[in-house]
Image (cartoon, rainbow, N blue to C red; front, side):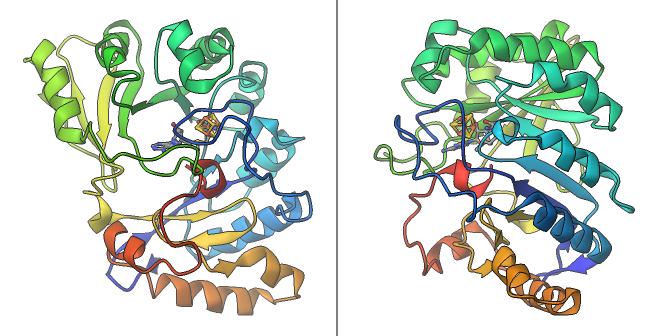
Length: 329
Ligand code: SAM
Ligand code: SF4
């Protein structure tokens, strides 16, 4: 078991396999994209697999592949298939925007993916275009249909943004009436790749819940699973559930079980820290597994107590101007 310096179990890795994306969600990156990493700067599949294998041996039980958009990286199924075969890994999942996902769904099912997080901030095609700057709504809906058809658990991630999609909160909640999906509302964070000024959080988890309660006073609180980052609810009679993630308010740090690896191989032991330990560079410089294990354990033993402390101690990238696509959401 991996235990950090605050007694928290670390068993969950989120691996961002690329910073590139086929959407341009305004809360994540500027319209003309990011200064994309070159192929050489990216971790190779071999390096990723090596890192995952080592971390699984050390105690990681769950891996989520994210990005950028995982499905824009060439031959992504090769990596997913190899990771799915790691001995000791209990759960492999993906976060995707859904644009290219539908054709892969049967293969995802075949390699044992049980759950996919699908990002969808609105059910209105025009607003989808305004938010993502791309006309891909129909493809995302096709991905949703394919995932449900193949009995893969779907969690819908919706970032709540003042003046942009708060009118979508109730329609998204209403999806849970007939569909067995978990719709999770996420507080907007300042990780927008410096594309615009973050004006501070207007819709925190309390306001999001109030909005839902206003329409559905009968909403019931569910028991949250261990390590859950969401407060979970259900409207009686609905097939699906609702989650609210206080990503900016950072109410869940006390039980945080997750670490991240960025597309260029940086370890982040908190979403709000600025990395520092580059695993890819260590591998390329010939570090042995014992050496890697030792620096990883050192990093796990020096985790910030919470996202506020991590934010304060940023040195390499002061300020929170990175894009979620280069961190790995
Ligand atoms: N491209 C994939 C997708 O959109 O699902 C995976 C990567 S994306 C960075 C992962 C998650 O981060 C998405 O659900 C997205 O909505 C969320 N995200 C991106 N920028 C965010 C921000 N500034 N605040 C809150 N969530 C954000
Ligand atoms: Fe791309 Fe996901 Fe960022 Fe949107 S949130 S721009 S889909 S990486």
